[in-house]
Image (cartoon, rainbow, N blue to C red):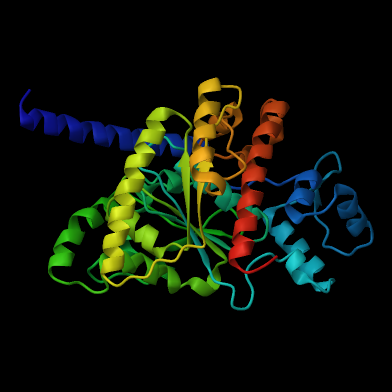
Length: 391
């Protein structure tokens, strides 16, 4: 097969796949090809608000919070906007508004958390999606940045990188070397109230090829500061920033690590992934040391390893998880993201459990998966509050 024929076939396959993806998105998110977040039950709303279900009902009965719509059976349904309005009403009626408005206040610093791994399939994008959605639903102002050219996280938010960003509109446009756009121009609202995104796309691959030339000509600011400066330009708008990094240690990942205040490293507990992790840590430490030699101060509030896709009943996995805890101690998060068919099934349609709802699958499976998500997110919330200096 000649090189010309191989090239032509690759081009044809790319075109065919783009058309197939477009049709799939339009079928699943018709008529306007955009996703919409479902409404939540009173039980779910109470959990998001940090209330007992009975207390939530009492607040409604006493007209202390805004009313919400009812379903056909007369049960209350809460949109994400309803949850925000209830939080505001509760905050106005208490001496301590932070009980309900959990975002940063005063001089508390913006928390920029990179989710990073050297290996594909480590649940990095899934982790970023679930944590960012959880924090948004619990009242935080959240920005997610998709630094991966594959743009899987962007696709999960209902965007179509291969269609929506054919010319511009990704995070690349805010960090590119020639005429970068203001960060606020590339940020988009998502269908989650309180959750915005700076999308990824294939164009991000250009950053990897352009950066060596930019280094030779002394472009300012240098590559490792461009993302950081873009984020800080919108700092006042957010409490948390989550960055989904590509599964490689290139200029994009290094930019994210320099911009970050904290790092989460998901690890699937098997020896292949742990061996890959060892290589990743060695290379990362060396490269960050080079960044420090260039005069850059790196100060992380925390670095945590998150055991992901964990099956507690799997003996070898439990052994590897024990090995990680023995070696890294408290840097390994106490809670783990469990491997779950509920999460996998939701992911088939680019959705999370927050979107599909409990009634769409086996309830015990759904509940078990959600308990895992909630436990990991609450543990991370404590880390964030500690970084803010809260007790």
